[in-house]
Length: 321
Image (cartoon, rainbow, N blue to C red; front, side, top):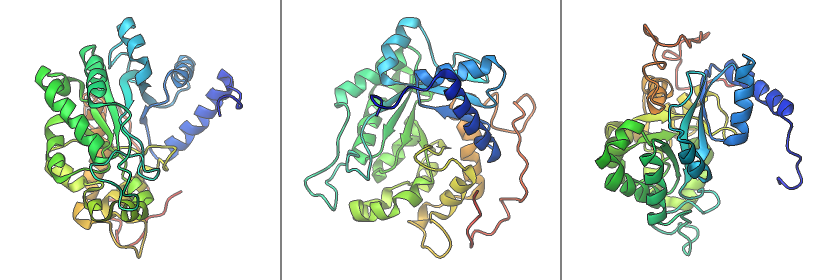
């Protein structure tokens, strides 16, 4: 793709970002964590210098940039409330749909396949610990239960012992498919950065590929009960970024009116879902003293809604634009 699609100019990239920012603002989003890396960071810096960024951005850089960041002495938190370095994004495995999410047991519809790990356990341990030792928070993409277990083992063996887990607030991105015993470990080890709208996207695939193991897919209630910090996001552009759609999906675990909930025992309340998008999102970025609540001394990122989402009946679909 990159060999045939011309690289956009800075001006073209800025125009695209500004269009996206308007759409994010339209649904009440005031802050994001971005994983696009160096090129996007240049665009955000340019817009910020012109006073037109219009969004608070925490940047995650790809694992390939760890050595460069360490050489420069850049650590998580560098920047200000408008644009700051969040840390490093690492891919531990693939995705459920492609059969590359690393699972402890083979897929139900492909008994010769149990997915792919992007790194061995030792390699992942080395990469995570190198980043953490140099003050860089890690966000590790883990879809399958095997990938999640390997990463939890890394955190349990190294990071919390040194105190960096609590200080840096490392996070698992997605944490989609877990085992019951590993759910209990999240509350002690790592932030669960999850995307509720994926439930609607994946229901049919989970039934086909996981069978009964799908019980522990997207276990939001169990994670909260374990004491884990549940921080919601969208994974845009894979999914729509409207947070109200995420709230509806987390609370009902269904795609729309008339459908059954996907394991309703894992539903959470509207209040818990809103908190996951606000206070927990700020906590995951180590910014809870700056934003995430409407209180004295916090940034005044406030939106006004036409309806009270705590009173809208959940027996019908909400309207999304």
